[in-house]
Length: 296
Ligand SMILES: N[C@@H](CCC(=O)N[C@@H](CS)C(=O)NCC(=O)O)C(=O)O
Image (cartoon, rainbow, N blue to C red; front, side, top):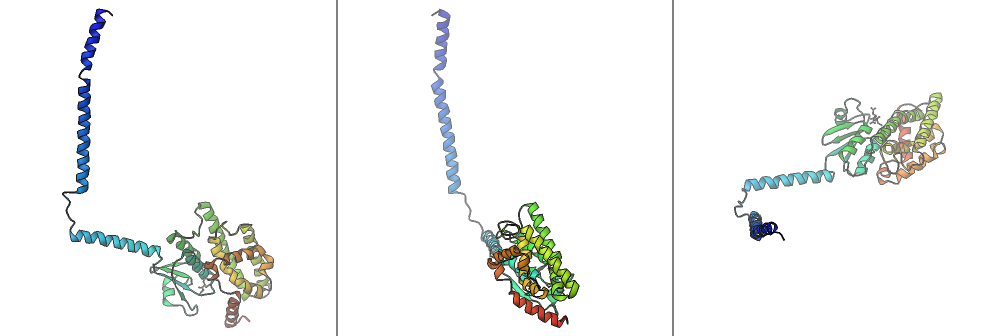
């Protein structure tokens, strides 16, 4: 080895000598830091400076907690005040009773006498003065399809009625609106009119029902696999089919067998079967009504 290189090497050795000392110093510093943090944590949890909250503060906290949970529980258990102004054979009222039942909402049903309407009905639906009216915590919601959508929005957790997809929702609204514009009025003409007016209504009703049957296709329900908005809108009319058949002298079942199978499928649901009245009972009422209106 040459002399210069030897000298350089010796210097390097001297310089390396204090390294373990600095290293030990660093480790010690880190350990002290950790110890300090540990003490802080212990101090924090043992809370030596902890002061007991004042009774009014404790009361405020407990009160807020109780009020919030009671409110949540009341919403979850359907303890809101829900009143339905209705008249039992109304297919529009049936829509709401089905929807509320699907959601498991408790409600009070008040039967209206449509020839002597209650002040509550006149006050709640001053524009149309018609049933059904859904009164939720004192606030009235009119028009059955609007009220069914309201029910779906207020109690969204159980049995969704409208589809979540915006396009499917628009389609469901289209068909429900179609049912609204056609079925009730044509059905009324079948039981209340005579001659050519009755025949024309019969032809148009069959046409409409066939169109709805085609829309249903091979699906179990209008919206697909589950019972939904269009089913709620249409199935109440099943309890009127006996009246249409008898007064119009035809058979919806012969004309639209798949639609009848669909209606029977819907009737397997308790929400539907406990709401739909017997067809013959509806027919009896229609006979009384025709008598009162001098239509016989
Ligand atoms: N478009 C309304 C129709 C309601 C309706 O026509 N209700 C009838 C009973 S089925 C009614 O209250 N009629 C009493 C009247 O017209 O004075 C709805 O969907 O709620």
